[in-house]
Length: 105
Ligand code: FES
Image (tube, rainbow, N blue to C red; front, top):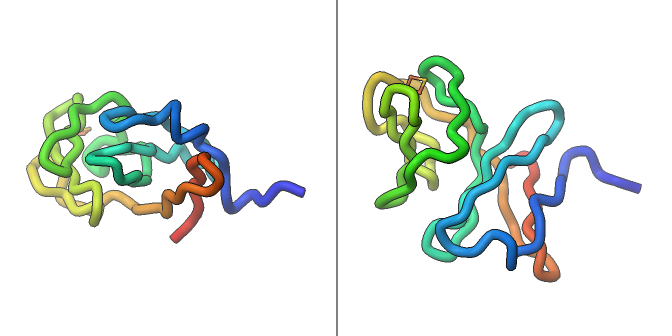
């Protein structure tokens, strides 16, 4: 039986360092990013104007919203650059048997 609070993001081999994808968890789009060999999961919506974060440049542990340039820290979800001020929600990303899973924290 599937657990709706935990979803498969894909094989870890399909998400090598520097890659990102989005999965749906409980009706919410969640962004999964492999940065420096660590997987991070956060809500796939900028807290400024809701623009999807998927595809944003990742650098120095931060993802940049492509719409107006806000940056969010992957590890904490904190908004580090205006125009966003609110943090983005974090999720748990974990590797099990070679696959990446996302769940609520
Ligand atoms: S929607 Fe992301 S910075 Fe404006």
